[in-house]
Image 1 (cartoon, rainbow, N blue to C red):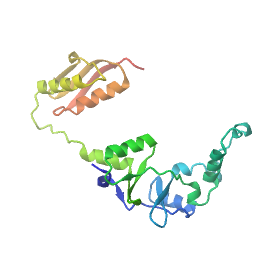
Image 2: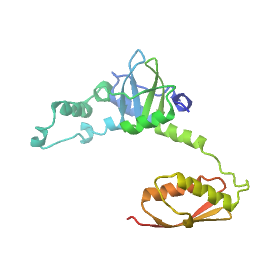
Image 3: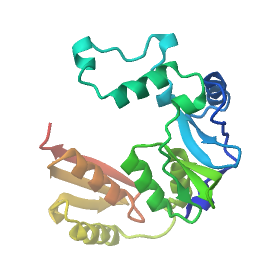
Image 4: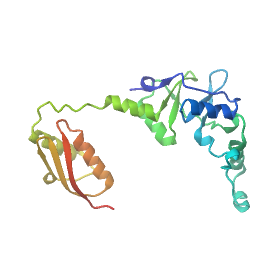
Amino acid sequence: MKAVDVMVHNPITIGPDENVGSAIKLLAEHDVSALPVVDDSGTVVGIISEADLVRREELATDKRRPWWLEAFTPATALAEEFAKSHGRRVREVMSDRVVSAAEDTSLREIANLLERNRIKRVPILRDGKLVGIVSRSNLIQAVATQLPIPDHSAAHSDRDIRLEILEELAKQKWTDFGSRNITVRDGVVHIWGLVGSAEEHKALLALVEEIEGVKSVSDETFPTFS
């Protein structure tokens, strides 16, 4: 799947010369956490988000440092903080570094962009103009549509289920969970024994649950981690 398959078309935007109050009103009215900032030509010039608005003089949440620490803070950082806490126009408060993608960008690449840049949404551009936006929630919705629905009506013998689990486990480098720790009865997988980490425990359950024919998992493992 690609960005064009999940993106929100015609997202709510705001102009760089609009009042910050207007941006706040749009965020609240449309229940979104950020707005692309678009100039008169349709070019995305920034993003204004809740994070840009939490440090405001009106709320007494603007950053205040001891004089000695402020003396060591770069002037550019102080100027940026002042603009965000005192700015009245969107252009003074917005983040002008825009991470964007094209309509044919794969969802894997979109997910990497979100994770790598620690952001929640990516504007989608065509010839430099905004045509949509993909957020984390759009990716989650896409995952939901792709998850297979378990078919418990199909016949799967307990032996076949167990063999398939063991085959999948043998491919994994993150565990050495032995065959003696797994039995299957009436489609219910019983796993027990020691598990070395919380991550291994989660991955083990995920692997077992995705095997076709598994009705439920009886988790009787013992953690060796705190």
